[in-house]
Amino acid sequence: MILEHLYQGEPGAWKITFRASAQELARALQEAEGQTEQDRLADAVNRAILAPDGFSTVWTKAVEKAGLTPVTDPDFSLQALNKDEGFRASATFFALPPLELGRYTGFVQAVEPRPIRRLTIELEINQHHGPEDRAADEAGKAALRRRVTAEIYQKRCRQAEELARRKLLVQLGDEVKGALPKKLAGISYFAEQRRFNLSLQAQGVNFDQYLQVRGQTVEQFRAELHADSERKLRSQLGLLLVARREGLWPTDAEIDAALAAWDEKKDGERTFPANDRNKAALKLARRRASDFILARSTLLPPPAEPTVVETL
Image (tube, rainbow, N blue to C red; front, top):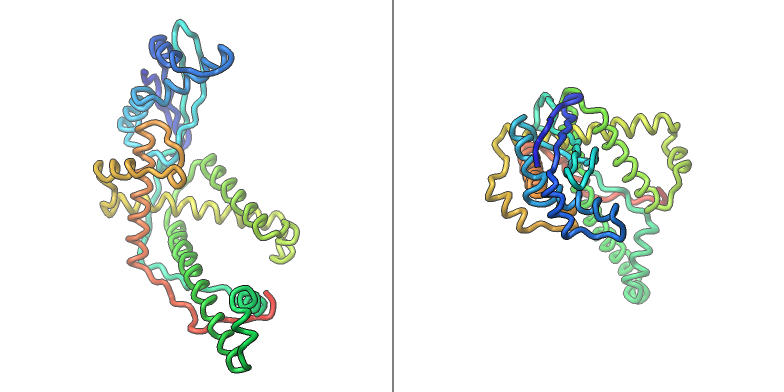
């Protein structure tokens, strides 16, 4: 495959135009699947692009030439196709835009476990300690409730600490300045909206109920979600800036090891070699930058005793 053009729209938004020869298309057609000729051609184009000696070489050349750090998978678009001539296509993607990084240590975040409903304690006792509770005297019942409450609180403290770690890292987003590609920000917003909708479904709460409890209008909710999604996006990009500044970027050997241990559930489906290497490198770099920041920031401990309430 041959690289034709590489150009940038707004900072961080890139497009590659490339073409494949008739011979490359013919090789891919030998393994293509599909019931119709059109389906087989479409499958052949995909196979040619994702082959180890396909778009991967074009991608590597373009990225290295421009000194880019891609942060999304490329989105392909077929522009021309002819069995006698091959095909021409483009790939759009986002790379780390020119951003300014402020401080990235010394953040503080409190660990705040959720209050425990008294009903939750009673349900736990009924499900797992019923015979013990029925056989106990008043002192024994009180001791059992203290023990169950402490167990629930320990679990909630662990959950709250994990949440606090994530919140602490999101604070990095406030220290990352500069323009973001509008479409990348939009992708981040819609992903955050999807996570929110799934969360509401899991809790059995509809959107109107949520707004009523929060005392928000739809416009206020959307503005808040936009701000939150941009802050998280800036934090994710900021982790890569920290990794670069502190020399935390993985070596080729470390990337090779990560690829060998690739988990389809956590790391997603493989695409083409150069992109998979980049995704593995980003994951390692972000993890190391996160550890670096957490080690140099403070999580305030949770209260010694839980808050028990009748209703939430």
